[in-house]
Length: 174
Image (cartoon, rainbow, N blue to C red):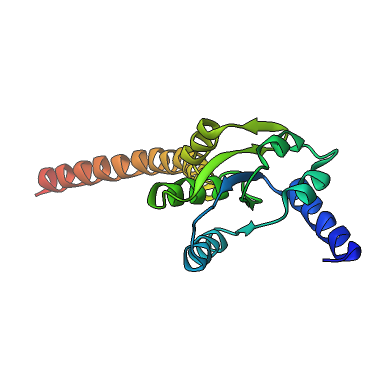
């Protein structure tokens, strides 16, 4: 890899570190190509990516970035998993680490906050962006349906009362 390629890679890594909601660092020593492709596929499904880069270049790219604290984790055979959704990459990595003992989570970063292994697992337990949006919509929609039900209920009560009055009036007339 010549100097120009290294500079381009450092720039790409810098963009990843700036724009990602979460970056998770893990060791992948002993994993097969098929296992790595499986991880990449699972990460792609949630809109994330997996990147293997030289630790020295990644550390250079981290300089001045919000997640610079993960530089200490970059030792040995490391892989970077990242996504714009702050929860997606952590969920995939946590689930994958449970099924593959050669994939070991070291930690990560979420914005300015450094995450240890427990922090990554805690982020993985959080609801995803889509789940949060769905619950917010449900909360917003619930009062509206209750109001509609409350508005509709008196009308049906009035209609039944009028029907009863009409029936009694017919009985008296007959």
